Image 1 (cartoon, helix red, strand yellow):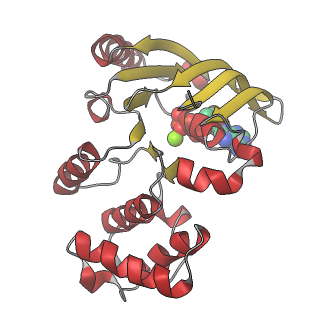
Image 2 (cartoon, helix red, strand yellow):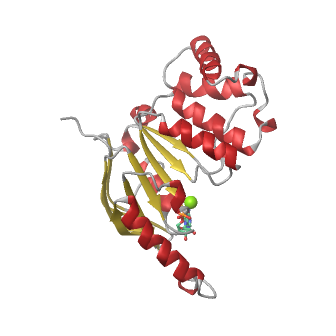
Image 3 (tube, helix red, strand yellow):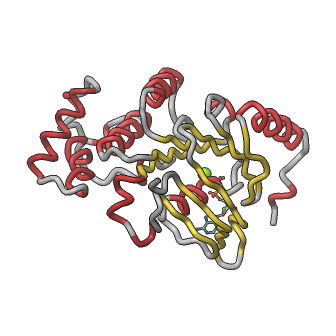
Length: 241
Ligand SMILES: Nc1ncnc2c1ncn2[C@@H]1O[C@H](COP(=O)(O)OP(=O)(O)O)[C@@H](O)[C@H]1O
Ligand SMILES: [Mg+2]
């Protein structure tokens, strides 16, 4: 059987001598996985390691059996990343160009990519977006454009970093519906338990380590109780280091 999913073995990651992730062992194969933890617990760093955007200080990462750092091109169809801030992702002045770019990266000609971009917009009822300047879209719309760009490349796994954090309630409902209908593996990172309550598996990170890993109900129950306990304290004294 071909290697599948994302596998981390003994992964540690540090910056300037500070440990950010410590000894993480995970094999992520379930269709819907949530990663929770409070601010600064290492969620975004873990996502960057999983996608091969940064190399771990120790341990190994395999995505569909491949080392992401050495297989950049294969990673385009293996993982699609939705960054928390769409402005770190959007590169082009218009929606049509932004969508077409990923497709040319996948090997399509400029003409094919433009036609495909138009088709993708038509599929989601947004043909009128093609020539729209990306900076005139709202934050939620820019995030949706990023999601469309990623989906256009048909990656096997989607890595979503706080996908609901900047969205108003109708946009959250729409995004949840859109994600629920996708056949891909989806790994959702969030500080918010409700964002991952429907997942097959939830992993709780604290200070760069896995605290708990299991069914959503069990992990989120313990996580929510602990967050309430910490919130009852005057300050996050333990985060000062
Ligand atoms: N490039 C970096 N340089 C220094 N510290 C970093 C860097 N990236 C992350 N950190 C630190 O690592 C910790 C985890 O950050 P992050 O992964 O962004 O957490 P989360 O996404 O859970 O909020 C934080 O203490 C953050 O300040
Ligand atoms: Mg983060």
